[in-house]
Image (cartoon, rainbow, N blue to C red; front, side, top):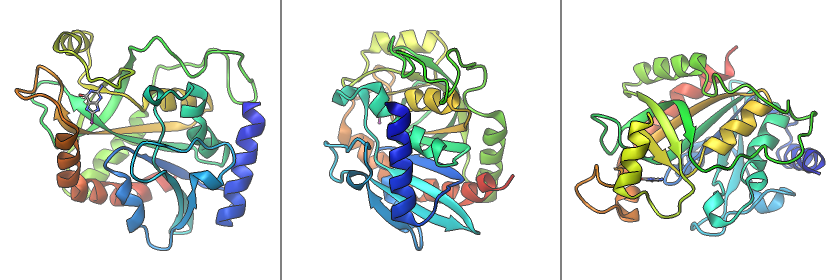
Length: 275
Ligand code: 8IG
């Protein structure tokens, strides 16, 4: 079923955008989806118009795909994502990313807002994800495997492409945006971690905590796409931060980082459409 559903969504995107292939997709995390509005000449397709796409219910806007051409290379921007904590199945959580890969995106950029706990990290930092910890005991590949999508036991030794991280670093250098690097731990949420859970995640080797990205990265790797992960640290994790976490802090940091994020992605996309 998933395979046919992905094909149907892919056809809907091709029809609505007039482009039957895209090269690169970028998923915009919370507070970052405004990036799409700044894309000149982009074609917007609401998720509700793409058969099979889950439509986010919570945030102010319900999610749209934007299709734009950068030097003749079609790029897909996914503004809005759904999370497991909203009650979506992981098959639904990864559906848009799977459709992007099926539509030709051999490189997927996953962005998110996250909590920071690595030494020296502070709110506002942009961090390249070097690896992840799946602390949810869930996996989007559970269930029967469809060999047309990928192998039963996909290798995860380089989920977040070293090559793409190097390209991101070069893009950052071009536009004076410094980038950290760290391991992202996936928690289900929606409550933030307790301080003890943050200490656990830290001792286990993580620098970032968040509620997204990992299932999408696993599904994209399953289908053979390269993945780049970028976190915006919008808050220090519980117990690291001297103050309680609030969604307002998260939004305020995202607002403050928007300019740097936009500059980075503008410099990065041409690096990613190039061979
Ligand atoms: I924004 O501190 C954001 N998302 N799990 N923990 C987790 N997710 C987050 C956090 C955080 N901040």
